[in-house]
Length: 87
Image (cartoon, rainbow, N blue to C red; front, side, top):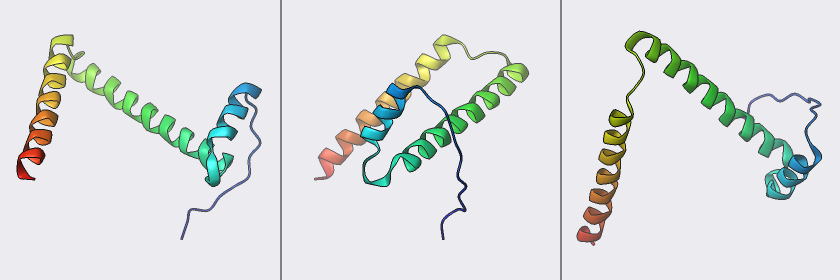
């Protein structure tokens, strides 16, 4: 069963509303806007967690971020190569 819904009136710039309407497809504008708001809430929650972690442990250094990006890139390459070798 789906979540209960409510009807709300929102105001947004016409060009944004029209672009969203054009992209919403068969699910409709309401579903498109709801998904966008849900993503924003996830980002807001993540930013709050980052702020808490940085307050406790200090900010993450650029070098640490790059090292993790490099690890992720390598893991993706390994996964792609492993999948190609398995075939």
